[in-house]
Amino acid sequence: MRSRRERQGGIKGIITLAMSGQGDLLAYPCTFPLKVVGLNTEAFEQAVREMVRKHLGDILVEYEARKSSGGKYLSITATFAAESREQVEAIYRELNGHDLVVMTL
Image (cartoon, rainbow, N blue to C red):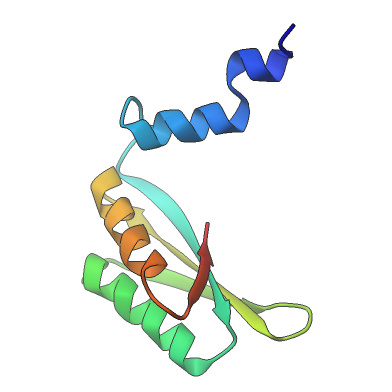
């Protein structure tokens, strides 16, 4: 017998649904917090800002940076008004393809 979470699909079901194009979990435009993690270097922070600016142009972006407890990693949260799913996916694709980016959330 499957558990309740398995029957409902759990978080994996939600992620699969969102990535399959069958449904959006967000209604656009919306405020979107994009988190990017990489090594704690100036080059990483500059690269993230440049990639985000490339896709958003003049849209206001609020940045918050936090170092990991050991100081090795830096997480940057860029919060902005996302206009479409395609816009957000394009930013994620570029960030995930960059050598300095360890992970995006």
